[in-house]
View: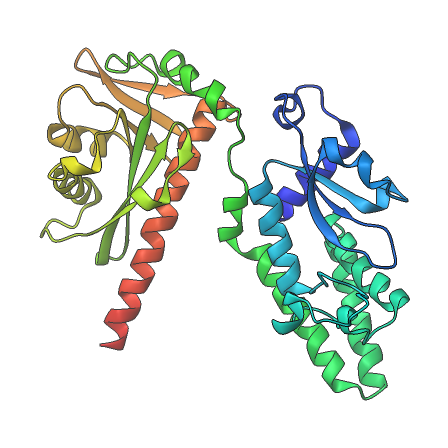
Length: 352
């Protein structure tokens, strides 16, 4: 999440010439604060900002973000950490939706003043500006002040804000916000040219990646992540319990691949990525139907291996290569999915 916010602020500040977000011909997405005193948070396209006649663009506009989904996810986190009002200072004193969820400081019910609400929104602006250290320092100072005034209830609320903020910034699942942009459509044809794989003659529509997770051979599981046209399709992901006696990674990978191709109803991949190196590629290849391009991606140096004319070819791409980044993204999703399943299975074993 910190990376998402930092990237957006760098784009806003430096306007990089070749940035895909600002050059794809679409209207960029921003989070904006409407004018005081009844300030609201909104997600809006760049083309609609001028119609709002904001007082100070620098202090009221944050972004751009890669998609409305990213901006919405950020607003959900902001609502959970700080809380904000959907209908501030409305004439009927009608509680907003966030008030019922205990995520509103009571602005809609006129429980705080306009100046107090602006100070509250200042914390959110610090968050969206990427000033995380300053924000946490400010919150800690507020706790000390509240304790001195023996307002322990307020101190407890602020402490919870800090814990939620820390959890959001350090939660690796938030990296899901860093989705590949619409530039993936232009990236797909590059895969053929970059790999030069003998079985990859057309742009791969469906890419599958396989990974394993275990703890010294216990709670051994596998996973399959699926990307369609360069974008994750979590509904197509699959888990596998390793049933074979051979607990080595290559043979466990061979088992899940064999079981996967007993399910033609899942659809057939155009490209398979194995998390591993030459051993995985050599042992698993016999289980893959002819005509499906297969590569192994080794973590240590991000080396790609595949067969060409019955010989194993190794390929080391630049760390910033967009094709390599796509493959790493797909592999990381498979790894995350396998690890999550492994932890759940291990917990069940411990309970038993």
